Length: 447
Image (cartoon, rainbow, N blue to C red):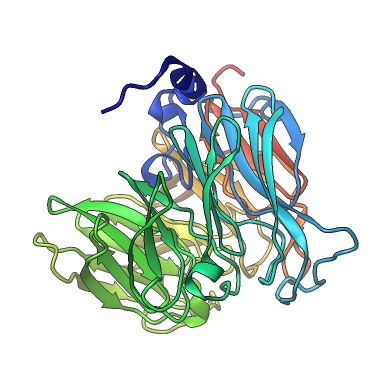
């Protein structure tokens, strides 16, 4: 192994931090979505938590990644005289650019930016979707139109790049390329699309294509996820036709479970607990798999039989953007119309449902909150820009405290004001963005 030079060590020094203090990509360390820091406040101070800084940015759904003293996030700016459709569902050809930004985590000052032209053809054309993935001295970003970039973390210079539409001869999915790239050893694993190229792995240093696998009419939106089971590491690729387990280093398929979904809506990150692997989606509901010790095809323990979005007709958890929390015996998540639900993991039986976490007056289509466990309790970031400290149990929902952090300045197809970006929790802070700014809020005890 070659020794790092002193100059290289100096360039990397900003990224060195205790792993639990970082949030290096989608859903934090190992994509588990758990905030592992101690010394966090029990309730918010009067007037809400202290905002340490605010930095103006442009539109986007991409959540921030935080490593050491750096914050990475993506946004989009329309070209002069360009305009997005009044109905976000519409698709057209909208000129503009995408940017990758690096900010100082202590001050919010922009250290560098990398911008590139990017004409949007996707529905909900607000901005990039995928959270940047930080790996040592490199970061990996995926834009809504399939621009995959490897950038130097210190200066934002491009080391290599691909465009999925050109590389694989495919179109952008309805709601854009969304699954944040996954680093595994020397590989960068992505959800792309196409015939035999729905899952693809690149050499993370050179960008050379290493393997491709799977075919789906639509790639879906769920990010690649590595799980460990039966002494093996399995790459879970969930697209709108099936759930698949692959060897992450070779792409070889270990098993497949067919599960056709409506509207291509495989979105939430799969959740593993022991031998059970859980999935939730908007129309088709939930599926619980029981994995086998020899990693042969798993058994379907239970699955929603009737596809529906109407909360009066849904049986399990019909989630869309929010990844559920899966404890030993229970599942907590947000349903199709913002109803927070608790399911019994073994049977799928619903124990309770509530609109209180998102503070909705009535069931609201796509109502959303992102759920993050921390030290036996839960931080919920709602689409209204509120941060909630809560207790979740089979007996029900308990609200400890609530504070408004940021304005919901995005809009859905009904022009309902929302913020649909997952926050990052690191440095005893919450980092969250909307369509006009990114802010850092202190959640340290005593702040």
